[in-house]
Image (tube, rainbow, N blue to C red; front, side, top):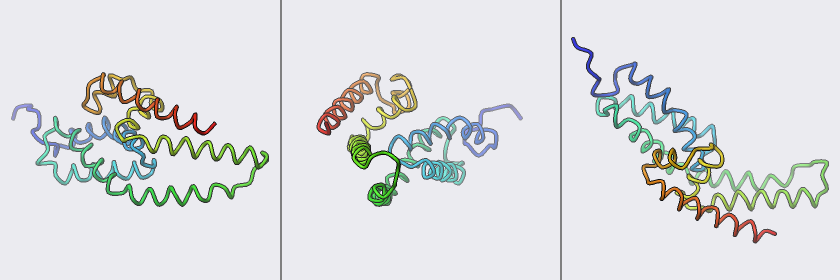
Length: 173
């Protein structure tokens, strides 16, 4: 039997290689879309389970796209639930007590809320680019490759995101 590349991801080593090379990237991608870390980890595991369940139908070259599609769709299905949880957790943040003056704590909390809302209000495409660049320190070329767009598109999205955030933060002052 010759050493041919497998034409699907059912081969254990192929599956393991895909998991080790893509799981972290996929998790970060979901976090940047707005998912909580634990939820992102769960969604990544679910995506890989679905990949395994459908391994005979997926060729290794298409596995990355398949995983991102599965995870993105699962994330979208859970967004309504996340919004409710975020709203609830934000309503409880004012009950924390600290040593800082109440005025400082209130301003800090209001600024943090304003910043989170400004980031959350970005269109998904702009938020992804902004968080991938600013949090994960990815270069525009890397982001473009991950999202399947041109570097120019990434630059444009980042520019729009920064303009939006500046406007919203400026209004806070």
